[in-house]
Length: 399
Image 1: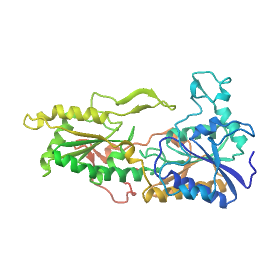
Image 2 (image 1 turned 180 degrees about the horizontal axis):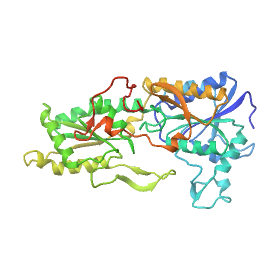
Image 3 (image 1 turned 90 degrees about the horizontal axis):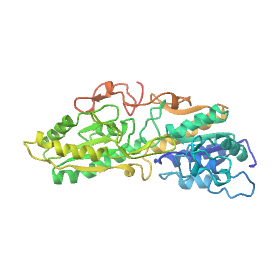
């Protein structure tokens, strides 16, 4: 369909948006164009590739666009993703989400449209796909690679939990926003002399609670990797409050955290295309329990609690310095691999150095906080020790 130069590269962003996606798209596009490639931006993650109509005169403007330096320069310094995003998994498309022109062919409750995706890639003349996403989005990149298509992937997620890399696009800005927002909310907690419970992102990994706490944003943090005792947590927060001249304390709680005898708290039981139910509510639940248990640790007096979910506030706005620099480097690393004829790789920061790893690492293991090395399970806070020779974010590598 497309007039090829050296080749055609497709790029997409999938899953939740984070600051740093547009700089990555910009880096890939500008380098690719200068090396003689054409770049096609796929809209709405894998969803754009599912919905393509393979007809010359069909309107596919909602599914893809040809990228130019002008387009990517305009968006390259901003947050979000101008290509838009989705959580579409082409291997498990709900019957109701099958494109209209394919509904007669796919009528199961869940449908594998990978054959259509491969035909659409061929229709567009794409030689390489560069998906930018978390482990869910990239897991479908693994699927495409196993089907024989050339894939080079770029990791992004605020949770920083893509295996194989120390760093994912969006993590630094998330930590920066969390620290800033927590400090802004301190005035409220101090004015009312209350413990403050702030729920942050982190389904399975607690990095987004650990790093801000380590930086001094909170007194304590609880994370998905370790089930905490709610009464002991209450005792610690009341002690922190009493020791503070302004009579308040701060807890950061990962959305996937669980207390002893409890499980993950879900907003509802509906699941996305990758089988994940939407988390939300552990902050509410813990706040209620701390208020109930507070008389046990405050001479019989009930202590009210401030509760706030930081949520989308930490993923909005422009990228910080690291989430402007790393996407630039990741994009160019991806092009280095393409130019070398190498595929099936994930570009990474590994032990403080840029590198690449086999793509299937994203589906073969999990990346979690090493509790024994970095988390004090009695004090519910990070361990402040043994920093020598650790990389920038201390606990996110294997060193």
